[in-house]
Length: 103
Image 1 (tube, rainbow, N blue to C red):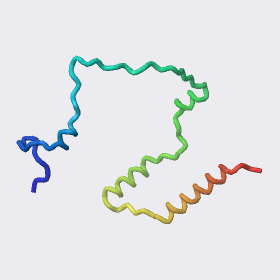
Image 2 (cartoon, rainbow, N blue to C red):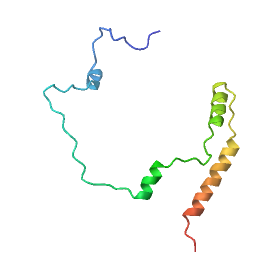
Image 3 (cartoon, rainbow, N blue to C red):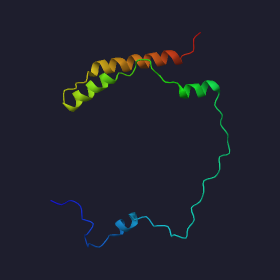
Image 4 (spheres, rainbow, N blue to C red):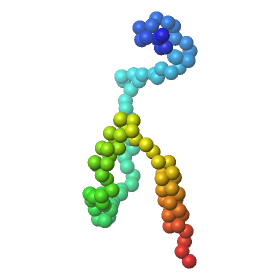
């Protein structure tokens, strides 16, 4: 069963189909340039250093990613919803604790 019309279809277009078509600009129209930036931003030495630092805190384990990817592709990956919920609650409590001013 064919769902959509082929591009070769000779059926007349309805008003809705015609409204979807975007008008094409004439070749003589010029492209407007974006305005020049009016603000200048400079990074401190510390901020610039952060951008060039390579983070190697052991939080990325390529072998683990490969094992998980393999398990997913084989349909063997299982999700422990209880562990995820516990970690989310723990992280939320930690964030709330940080945001409250200390007396």
